[in-house]
Image 1 (tube, one colour):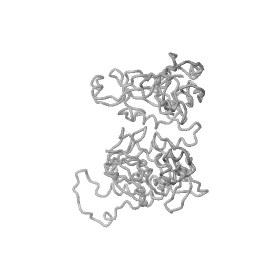
Image 2 (cartoon, rainbow, N blue to C red):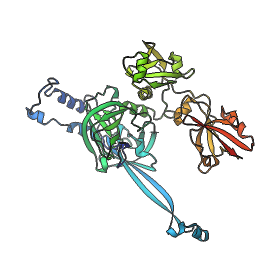
Image 3 (spheres, one colour):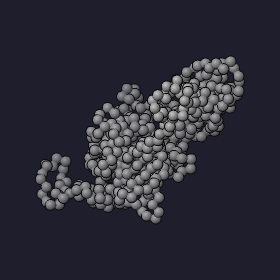
Image 4 (cartoon, one colour):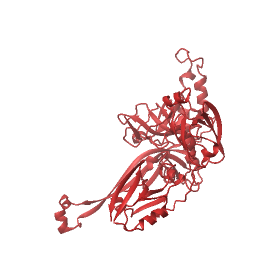
Length: 492
């Protein structure tokens, strides 16, 4: 089985969908349709199936909702230009001939590729949400509205961790139809939903289904996995499209499918609207997208752990370590505590804990519901970004050393979160390696942590610089990569 981002032609496919929708207001056509659907023949769950008894029942349709919502979904065209050097004749691949003729027979070839995805207008001034994987590496992005007008788009936020990107088009004084974001926390399994997108590039398409599951985690699609699952047909090309509730609000952004063939098999995934809202709210924020940080590490409570702790069922996150003076430490959280909820929103595992934190607004305080030695307690923690201490002291290394051509920095919780490293890690981390440099030839990699040089512990960039000022016959280096320390020697 494969989980694919819906680019054109994949198997767990991240979807692209295109629509443009009129301003959908709560209480408007979507709510009216929902009320009709609930009222007609609403007796009990065990009511008998029957033939429609009136013309009104026969005419029940999703069409009014689609007519209102459709114009808010757009097509997103991402163009990429690739350049490569080629020989005019295969004979010039032979070094013997190139020795005499040089590279004069080389020429550059450029090739433009274009991927088709979808997006959703979320503000009337032309702010659009799509998937990161739809626009990744694009040299030019074009948004096509439902009336076929085209606009150049610029990226105002691109967040690989959530697989979301925010685009802006210039529409002057015009106001576009848009979709309001739902509160995805109130979404329930079994709710009717519509998926709108541009599958296989055939044009705007609407499919219907239900929410088949919530809080799907560990799908391997993005860093903050916590998806709405639906059986509404979603296919390659739907990435970035809309999953719409019956009140006309946006439940989520269609992102991926689970498939053996590359086509829809009734298991699609959407990024919840609450995560979308968090990324939208970060647009324009100084310093980029910041996420709350608890300052605690833990493990998902399994059945065995729940039995040992005397819990009724396996749920929550068992805290194993606390960052000194971090939010968790100041809240009174301790190793051995089990977090069950944040602001009364359940925490079932480590992924859901990360999602709850990521969708909590910075500033102020939030509530933690925990179990400690069999007793349920409520704690309050400050919602703040990770600490930026120590200062990064970012440095490009040069000279005749094994690290020449690499950029290093002091690790802080803030830097670790930004680069995808362990927020509890300390020391000096490699943040960039220049192609063709000595560091690259020695297989130094981004996120490597430099632990020792010739027996000296490397605690910060200043200590590293002093160690590199030496001129030994050989460099004995210890590097931590993916939690494992490797030692090797480089002769000078």
